[in-house]
Image (tube, rainbow, N blue to C red; front, side):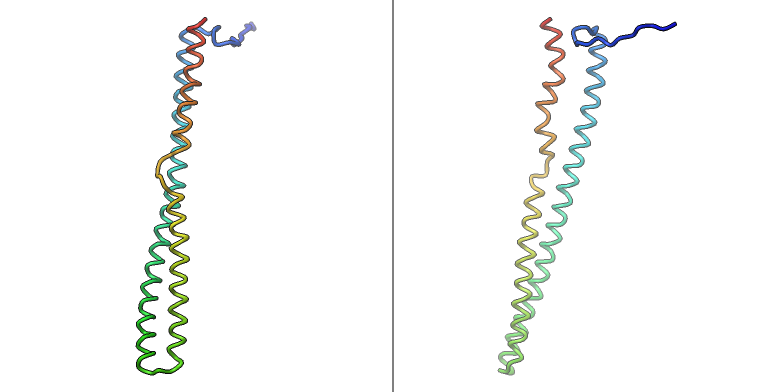
Length: 142
């Protein structure tokens, strides 16, 4: 025996029970999708924050070695007054330049990670709420 089962084409053709069931399913699916989006956003921001912090740490280490080389340069310059101090000064300048570059890149990475909130998910919430409320409003106005 074949029965002709057709889905109603318009929300107003649904019974209240069907609408509540649909609302429950859509709400559950929407919450799961928004949670997944929030998780992905926070993971991405965490990755940038970690990279930025690592680069800042590297910049600090390079600056420390730059300071050590600057001290060594001053010692060589004062004790020998020979061209060997010039080589030490060049190394010092290179280390400071590398520290500056690492600090700038690290700063950019930390800026990309802030603020640490799921912005897309928050922006989607009003639209999602309107999509859930729309069938209810249409049903009530019929």
